[in-house]
Image (cartoon, rainbow, N blue to C red; front, side, top):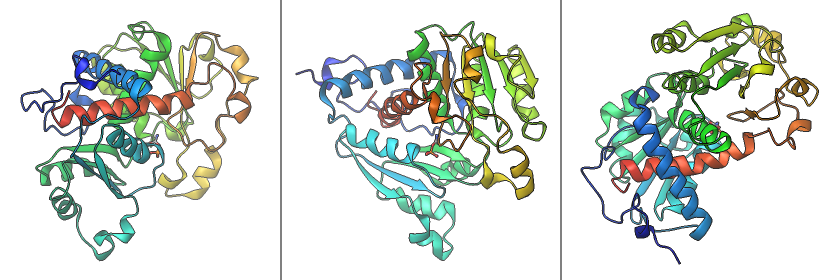
Length: 327
Ligand code: CP
């Protein structure tokens, strides 16, 4: 039976000189193309290890604090699964109202508390910039699992890994990626657009007028010379699209419920709509979906959104191993 030590990327010993040892993961701005190649290489090996032996002891004795101030299914449970697949354990705080946060404890104090018991902290919080606040307070690595409408870097990493794995290694250059839906509040698309701008891609943004991609994100992407175009309908760009990245209109971020009602059903992906798309393309979604992709499309081989969730496990295994000096 293969063992972790058989892999060049998965030594048993903790390496305090490893480039990501002890580092926070707060924003995709931290990564360059070489970093992504390295992370995807480790994630690919993690996938092989899970498929061959399931669980192994790379992080035996290590503890993750999973601190979620906002609801989550995928991010929370995939970080838990990642740590447990690597032989570590998890302190789950998925309902902060049952923690001392409900008594008014601040985020820095909560983080200082958890790092007494854990080796790494994964944080989801409704406020943009909260992960940075937590990282400033913490001595241990903090991983941003989504900060309000700010960033979701581990999602963008798994999204880019999905494109690599689904469309073939090295095939991000030259692709046309179309992002659809709530581009204003969607932190996943903010992070993904920034990360994809490391490659030679074209990005289309399709959204209602009130949910356009923020100017600051587009300016960052433009500074890397990536062509971008904005649309309010999908028809014009669907035939040229290699990756259609669909997002949910995020009801919870609207101050005015009437505004949400006006745009909530702006786009719905159905088998009929997808007749205009290529056969060799993929449809992605960070999930959860509410109505923007019809379940009738789920059996289409181009529907990559359920496979995308599994890639998240391997990316999060890679990131935990990296910040804990084991990859
Ligand atoms: N994609 C994502 O962040 O899903 P959860 O909100 O379920 O974690």
